[in-house]
Length: 289
Image 1 (tube, rainbow, N blue to C red):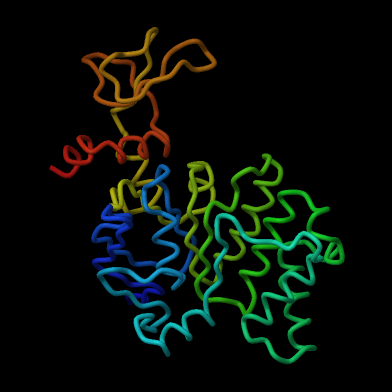
Image 2: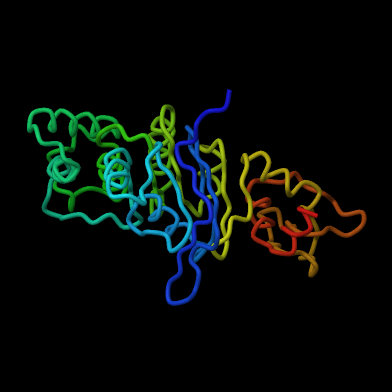
C-alpha cells in the first residue's frame, strides 16, 4: 500500500533578479526525517520558504497535507498545520522562553488562554526546557535558544516540520541533544531538515535530497547516496591531482574522491563522499548514464 505523501510538488521555480534560486524542482515528502543537503546558494532555504508558504513560486504547484497553498483557504490550512524553524529565528531578548512560545501560540490562533498555556508547557517539555521556561532568552545558551525556536515550531502538533540549519553553531553535546529531539519529532510526522552537516543526515534521516544551483542532484536513502561513491574513494601518499576532492588525514595519508587510478588502494565510502560526488555535474552525468 502506498502512503499518501505529506508534500507533493512539481516544477517549482523561483527567480531572484533573473537568477533561478529554484529551477523546476519536484519533491515528494512522507512521514519521517528527510535531510536536505547542499552548499550555500543551492536553493535549500528557498525551497523551505516555498513549502512554508512564506514565498510563492513563480511557476509550479504543490500540496501540503492535502491542501493547495495556491488558494487563500488552502494557504491558511497549511499554515495552521505546519511548523517552521527559520535559519535565523527572531527573538525578543527580554522575553522568557515561556513568553516567546506563548506569543507564537497567539499568532497561531490559540485563543483560549488556559489551553494555550497547556500547549506551551507541552512543547517546552518536549524539548527539555521546562526547568528554564521562566528564564529570559538573552540568558540562555545558543543550544537552548534553538530548542526554544523548535518548541515554537512544534506548537499544535504539526504534520509537517521544516527546519533550516537548526544545528549550526551548536557544540557537539548540544548537537547530540538536538538530534535526539528531532529524531523524536520525526516519529509520527514529516520533517524536512536543511543542513550542511552530513553527520546529521547519517544519524537522523531516512531519506536525503541533495541540491545544487537550484536543482535536485540526488534523492534517495543515505545508504544509496553512500553507495554512489563505492569504488571511487582511495588512499595515497600524496594528493592525487586527478581526484575531484582530496585531503590529508590524521594518519598522514591522503583520502581522494573521484575516479581512481588502476590498482588504487580503495577505501570504504562515507555519506560525505557520496555527497561530494553528487555535487559534481560531470559525475552526476556519468552515474546516470
